[in-house]
Image 1 (tube, helix red, strand yellow):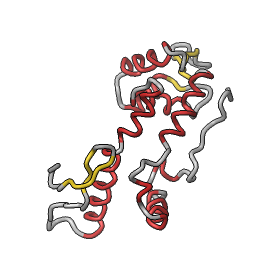
Image 2 (tube, one colour):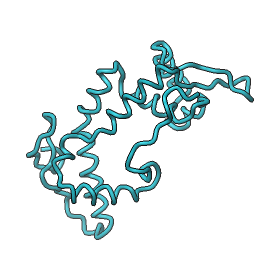
Image 3 (cartoon, one colour):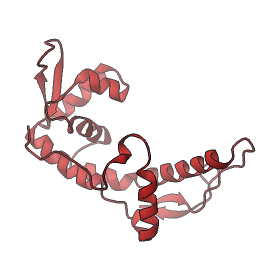
Image 4 (cartoon, helix red, strand yellow):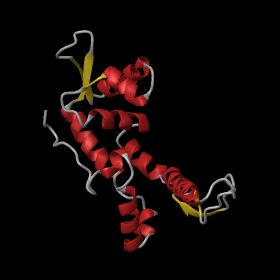
Amino acid sequence: MLGSFQLSDCINDRVLPRRLAVPYDPDMAGKQRAAQEAWRAIFDFIVATSAERNAALGRAGLTPNDARTLASIAPIAKGRSMRSLADEWRCDASTVTWMVDRLEARGLAERRPHPSDRRSRLVALTPAGDRLWAQIERAAYRPPRGLLELSERDLRSLRDAVMNLPTGSRRSSAPQSRKVGSR
């Protein structure tokens, strides 16, 4: 049992609920209940398939936080300020420094002077960081095996529904990335 779930399905030796068992709440009806059931199923699937994503990172010698750092830096060729990373991640500047230090030690990121603020530094990917991020991005967006067990019709319905979510999910179906070496 996991919470109120009877676990009966496996993906990568991790259990998944076969049926949603959201406790009845008389104050929650219709759209709110459907949203809770959908989110619970999505979240449980993400957690259950994390081993597949983490294996790709491990093969590259990265932790999930290393990958998050690469993902946050990669879209902006000129680099990002350390402060903007701390704001995005809602963490202390020293945490960003530590994470960037890890990537810099591996030759994947570099600090640069900020063009208009001499007190600030930008962090950008090196060409090696660009290449590794392109490799990791392909692996990260590879569908987990469990997702491929759905019918094509169900997958199209799921895709169409999640494309309407706010923020980053309105991207086109193919991940967009900058060209390696474009600086």
